Length: 341
Ligand SMILES: Cc1ncc(COP(=O)(O)O)c(C=O)c1O
Image 1 (tube, rainbow, N blue to C red):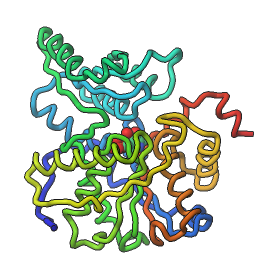
Image 2: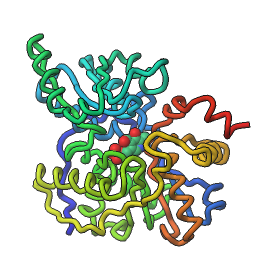
Image 3: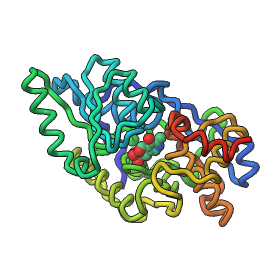
């Protein structure tokens, strides 16, 4: 099934794209594969990471609908919330973040940045968070009574519209193949999985543009938040949302999406010493930062899998770096002291 005519809906190009795509020569040698990286950690400093690609579509629609405020939600240190707060500040929109958890005892990392960008923050319990529809309605009616109009963005920007960001990113990747020393194709693309929108967009791109060189390429998510079953469900839901919403001419099979399970480690946003040591190794070896919550665990999973089976991903592997570097500043000092000299 392929359709090169399908054009994603309109967006505003806020991300700094195309993002660089380069080889990781030392890690390639060490790990025995031809390892490349797509640097979506460089989509722009303040909104660095994968979320801005989704927000290009989502916030474009919000503006078209006349929104004066963006409401979104996530964990206390959500990268998505920070990117939304940065974009809202740029656009002069009000931004309300509904964060799951308690107000942290000190300003740090993304949570500090949310506040620098002027976002209004509502800290809620897990129970309240699960009733997001209710929270949304209360906020929306408050805004309406003040003459404003809100637009709600789901967690991680992961809905059909947000996934268009990574369908477009797949097209961007295809443009980069075979140029400036970049291989003609990769055997696998590996990406961190949280709310599923990034992987969903990449898989949609791969299926839609299937006659291209990347037809055989596997898109492998590394679930770092939820178990593999729930993570696959999230990807499928976002894909259906996109396919139905835009009448996309495609169908997909379970084999189109893969999950590399076993790397949630101690739990979401909790790091084991070997993961932090690994993250420091990557930084020292390639001069590239990954983060403890998403990309560090995903790349750790990639490396561990290669150790067990050097042929698992094929010979040419692309790690899609989705950002998150500010997360390094939320790790406790005591945890760093355990692994750094
Ligand atoms: C840095 C980073 N990488 C990867 C992800 C996962 O992306 P997605 O939520 O689209 O699965 C997220 C967000 O959840 C993130 O903040």
